[in-house]
Length: 213
View (cartoon, rainbow, N blue to C red):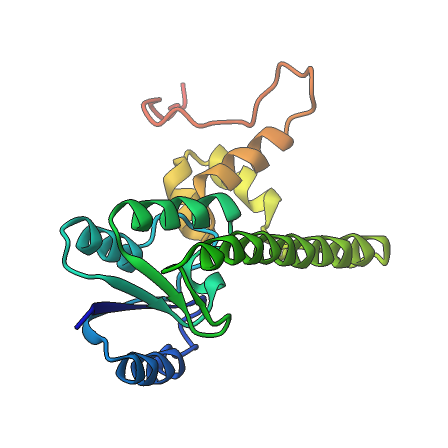
C-alpha cells in the first residue's frame, strides 16, 4: 500500500481547507492509498516559495516517509511555473508521485509530467492576468481622482512645531499625537523653508530663569 500525504492551501484565514481535504481523502481511499499525514498552509499566499506546511511536506519526502503527494489542484502547490517545476523535480528525484485531483493528473507516467508542465504555465499566466487587471483598475481609479492606498494621517502640524519649541522630545510628541517619530520628523522638516538657516525654535532646559536687576 502506497503511503500518501495530502497537501492543502488556502490564501486567507476565512477560507477553510476542509473542502479540499474531504475530496482528497475520498480519492486516497478509492485508490487504496494510506494517508500518513496531512499538511495545510492556512492563510498563506501561493506566491510564496517558502511555506511552513509545504516545507514540512518536502522534509517528509526527503526522509522517505511517503510515496505519493496529493493536492486538490496544481495552483494549491505553487503559482510560479519555476517553483512548481522545482518541487516536481525534487519529488521525482525522491521517487514520490504527484497527484492532482482537479486536473486528474498523475506523474506516475511520462504523459502526466508533460501535462503538469503545461498546466503550471497556464496557472502562472492566469495569475499574471489577475495582477494586470488589478493594476489596470488602480490606474483607472487614479485617473478618476480616487485615492489609492492608506488614507493620509491628519495631524496638527502647528501644534507639533509648538510642542517641539517647548522642548518635547520626538518620542513624546509622537506619543502625544499618536503618530510615528518619522511623521514627526517629516512635519518638523517641512515647517522650515528649504534653504533657510532657521530651525524650529527649541528651549534650552538647562538655562536658568532671568532675574530682575
